[in-house]
Length: 369
Ligand SMILES: Cc1cc2nc3c(=O)[nH]c(=O)nc-3n(C[C@H](O)[C@H](O)[C@H](O)COP(=O)(O)O)c2cc1C
Image (cartoon, rainbow, N blue to C red):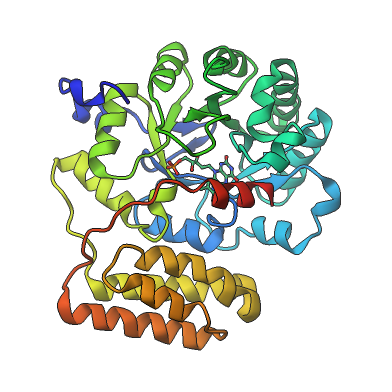
């Protein structure tokens, strides 16, 4: 963002007092969304973020390849048991008919909103012309949108879409695509302020998002590098977006949503969670996580969440290494609780941490999965 800090005249009260975001029949409770992150935003994590102030959570991407729908991975991704609505499922693929079929399949399994993924930069996805690679083939991208909308509209299910600013710096076509997607019936558009070529490197830019917001009547959501209440304020000021979507900064810090909401509403910082509160929230998250994945798989996949939670905290890296060799859920939970109790000896509240921002490999791997 070049000039966000130079737009102090922006009135946050006007953002907060505007009607809430409406996606088809669904009125969302607030304007802070958790970003879909394959391998991260499973149901337990989405629920945790919703409890801590995220108003909306899109599920991890589900492939349009039918042969994978019966797989454990896909069925776990499609698990929405007990999740607060609206249930939004993201689909990814390259073939319009298959994408339409995937939309119908997910609606039959409870999806109330279908989100089309045109944002994932992973090579595996892009080679198959899915994810952000679709932005390079505008005719195919539009064909997919039309086919998905044609299946969803008669069922009363709105279709949203998430994309990047374009394929590369020279091919930043988000605005043109956004106009045609809106005309084709897309109900909300999220833009991550990077090109496909950038992956997760460099900085997100917000000019393209601002231009799309100014041109469209449907809600536009700004995404990319929002990692603090101040950054959230500045991105809103600059883009005038209807909502903000936060991804990596919520990893290990799901309370960022309530912190941002509080800051936007009052201009003041909410205190960080107390150490016991963080311990208990993470413990609950772990139990929920094991419930979805089972002991063997759950103890392994929980490691990344624990790693993020302790990242940047005093002694966190040592603990992460010790925790990574534990093989049982009960050991993992106990180690985490003991570690936080030790931290509680010297800190009442979580001390500030450095936010991580270069996660190409992690995202590549997760999106390709
Ligand atoms: C591990 C990981 C997995 C992701 N998976 C998806 C995905 O399945 N679908 C999608 O649209 N974007 C995906 N993304 C992109 C995020 O939704 C988001 O656009 C991006 O991380 C930028 O936002 P941030 O700076 O707040 O993290 C993924 C990102 C990461 C880091």
